[in-house]
Length: 93
View 1 (tube, rainbow, N blue to C red):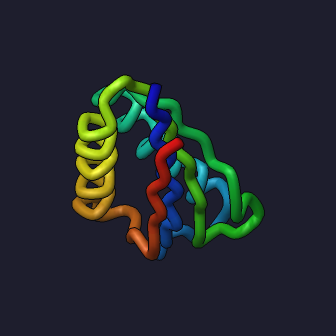
View 2 (view 1 turned 90 degrees about the vertical axis):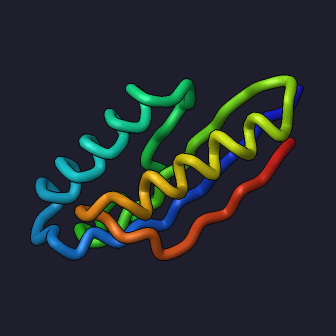
């Protein structure tokens, strides 16, 4: 069993309040959940309105499949105009 964990550090430049941030993060999380079979949660920078840290987890028996799926998520986030991808870290257990 392979568990893939992706931590994403996001910048939300158009956010001027926590409400704006929540809307942008919720929209992104919903889009990711709808298109991919992953678990996703906001895990850091909860009180900062221009930053978000998200964690994504995926389980499979094929590491290549998990890595490919998480790479697709990174590319999806890079193509999202409402957020900027500052950094990410991918780990496998």
